[in-house]
Image (cartoon, chains in turn purple, cyan, red, orange):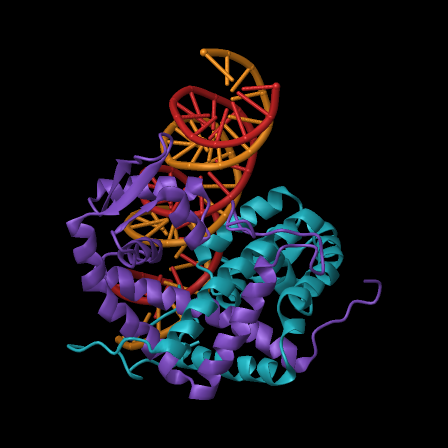
Length: 170
Length: 170
DNA sequence: GCGGTTTCGATGACATGTCAACAACTGGGT
DNA sequence: ACCCAGTTGTTGACATGTCATCGAAACCGC
């Protein structure tokens, strides 16, 4: 690392573009979501993950792992969503420590109302701006990076990632 | 919007991959940065933008616009960085309302110490995992999306973006 | 030069996220 | 049966980000 390899022009362009896109896309999607559906992005993600589940319910830690959130963050966020009537907490039958998070009817209604507009926004600001080849490339490249970051460690460095578990032994 | 066009399999893969990559990359880069250099990503970004400037100093609002931050956020953050001795605020000669943010020697030292490791991490976890074609594609695609999101409005929708100014009249 | 309007940056209240500590419980070894 | 290390989810203190508001200064048409 004595002579750092800086990014060349193309790499720099990709990296800066990525970061700028990230920020702008986030701002815009969040803005539309809150305006059109009264949900924040985190709200949407929670509801969306829950609604994709057979029962509309998940163990708290299972949900946290899927979302790559810490349990603490999820717990705080659920408290707020619960107060708004979007989700409920139930005791877990098989594990006395556990909580199960469940979608309420209001929660289901909220996500169903929000989804079409949100998908449309994702198309409008991202997907529909890309060629099919670019969509393919983006899928491939992001998956490779994700694989790398979730690899069992000792990979090219001794570092681990992810808030809590979600590791190799999941 | 009556019959929402959902994402097809490839689009879904790209979108989910993007979001997952985003999250994991952020966590990892932030983790390494704070561990190796004692800086958060926002800290790094502020110092980095300042250090790229001829005089190591910028008007507060100029910096906010470049970073796509609200003035308020930047002001709060600068207060904290100032307390750590990384930056200083100076009065602006040409505008009595204004502040100029300047890098201190400690700030310059911090960014110079942090940069090589951070660039290496960006390579390790992203850039070096991509083919040259993918780097090129990522650059092209992100720039197109950024263009779209910063376009003068009335574009395909009547919506504007960005925290404060940075708009069409900039 | 003077009022009205806008811009600049700071601030306080509040929302959200992180981190460390904790109690309750599980499961395995003995 | 019992202990104990590990796991689960919650909590409180704190860091960070957002939003509305504010005073000061600049700008602008007159």
